[in-house]
Length: 96
Image (tube, rainbow, N blue to C red; front, top):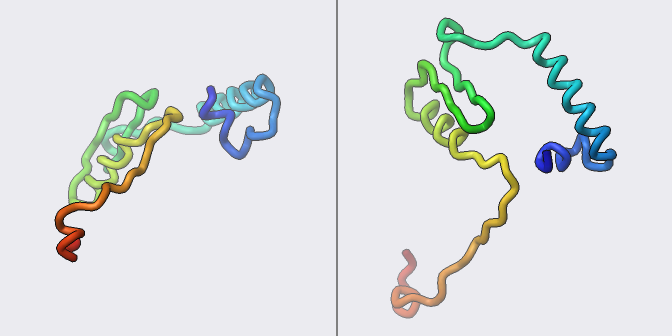
């Protein structure tokens, strides 16, 4: 719920109204969209952001895309970027 409310569509909207709008959108999508099956070609089916069904994916780049999608985190979380301190190589003028 928190992730949905933080999207640009719902940022300045009342939370209850935003959830009603989201559910209405989802119902409209369910009426229009058709699920894919194995005959539709290579695809990734994601169920509830937890189950992944990968079908007919071959090749270096497509597999990298699958890896990326499977490791996305849909929940908000804190992460830290750090830089290491001075190392022996730094003192010797070597990088790497």
